[in-house]
Image (cartoon, rainbow, N blue to C red; front, side):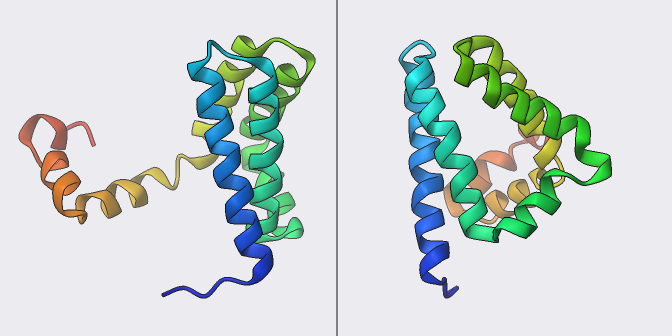
Length: 128
């Protein structure tokens, strides 16, 4: 079991609530208030989990500046009131920022009993 500090536990809660509000905001036809709350909670939770300095270093690496621009630009566009355009920017920036983690996530999901058998089907295996 991984031991977490109290700050990291708070960060996990903030990140979880942020993802919930983002998901709920998209389900409710891109409600800008819920999306704005979700964005703020997600970014704050990330800073609590990995620390302020590491968060800053992650987002502002030279090779990730385009991704950071799209992600944070999308957050800003949502905050000023254009939720659909902002979420498109955010999703694109999110995929650019975290594309290095996707193979790790797929490898982890392959080891989960039910989901792993689904990912190992012949038609799906070739795409992942």
